[in-house]
Length: 90
Image (tube, rainbow, N blue to C red):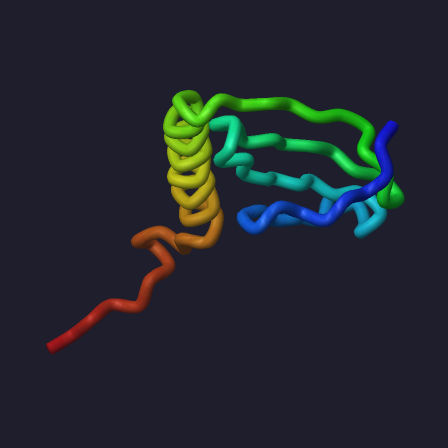
């Protein structure tokens, strides 16, 4: 397992909802046309996945569809429905 190295110029770290000892790193490697997604725990890489630049749009599209669906589900939980909404008169 590799120790943490600085992210390339283009990259991000996302902390796991279970705690900051777990993280997801996403880094672009333009020199080799790859995006590397890696899982980290206690500043040690526990696994990585190399995604070619050509595959990135499909990943983004899948994440966007999932996000859209999540908003629909969340809105259905918070929408009081027509029977509990105040009537607008006038």
